[in-house]
Image (cartoon, rainbow, N blue to C red; front, side, top):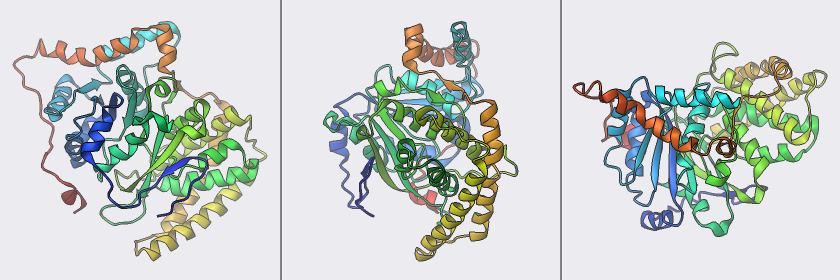
Amino acid sequence: MDFQQGLISTVHDYSLGNHNAIAFNQELGQRPTTLLIPCLMEEFSRPALALIRDTLAPLTGLSSLVIALAAENAEDVAAAEAFFAGMPFPVHVHWTNGPAVRELLESVGNLDLDVTGPPGKGWAVWQGLGVACQDAEVVGLFDADIRTFGAAYPERMLRPLLDRSHGIAYVKAFYSRLSLETQALQGRATRLFVGPLLASLEQVFGPLPYLRYLQSFRYPLAGEFAFTSDLAMNLRIPSDWGLEVGLLSEVYRHVASSRITQVDLGLFDHKHKGLGNQPSEGLQRMAGEIFGTVLRGLMEHEGCVMSMDQLPTLEVLYRRVGEDRVRQFGLDSAMNRLPYDRHQEELTVQSFSGLLRPGLAKLMESPIAHQLPSWSRLKSCNSALQGDLAEAGRADRRRSFTTTLAKPPRKPNWNSNIHTAQIAA
């Protein structure tokens, strides 16, 4: 790998294996640190979450783990708690869509604020941050479906924040997205949409600071990041597929680039989303919502508006840059003896290009995105809301068990003895 630096400080993986679990646990003691995992109940039937749990188990210096869980009933939540029983730190399973949580969040409507959804990762992250930031100074976020999760992941993500002398407030992951089964390149939304889109927008608008900032991230759609709690408390959270880019926009608004770093996590694989058969499905829906988020960022930070007159230029540029990237990724794959379907990649670029015109029209109709308000704003309205939310996330199952004591909790289908080698097989 290279050792180059740019606008955003880069922590490279030099593949020397310089990881020290004992030292890392000691470093965790420097600042109260919580990990947050937004999670669907279905993840408990897959091996990735067991791998994550077993990898985190030696982190005795961690202050707590928050599981922001979407579940159908209190029995599922109890099963999730049993899944994480025995960890050397407190585990808070927060039921994001439980009745008490919904009742509490609906009451916030009296403040003319809508925080009742829509359900999804953004809503789960927003709730999880409210719970985690009560006691933590550092919060790290990982998805629940990472099939390559290893001890280096939390160590590399959190260490830049644990020593205050580095001055870092936000850490973003980047990695090589490869399928464990086929070894083919993944990450099409980043490789074939966001990268070519940002390069094309730069040709349309010029080298604007915000575009330079976004292009400095090697994997802007990475769902793994960490931040200080004071920063997390002041971020508005997007509630659609523009979550990751939208958070980068929020970080740009609040933090100098010198306080941001990106960290190489090496090889990475998790669930792969299909392209979808129409713009409202799969990666096409994701790309469309990301497009709107990027253009809103240009409006907010640069005062630039994409007009319908400029759109044909963007469409032509995007197709050209996208096709150039397909050729480049084909060469990269060939030299690394990786399988590569160039025709399918070309079709993906074609599908993504068809999203630009309807995406711009939709943005012009509704330029204001739905964002969940920052927790600092909510605290100014109701200082007890964070604590009430954490309590509501626990209250539902206690209430349920008082009426169903004879009914044992349903166990999720998981095997704690699944290891990385089995996953890769």
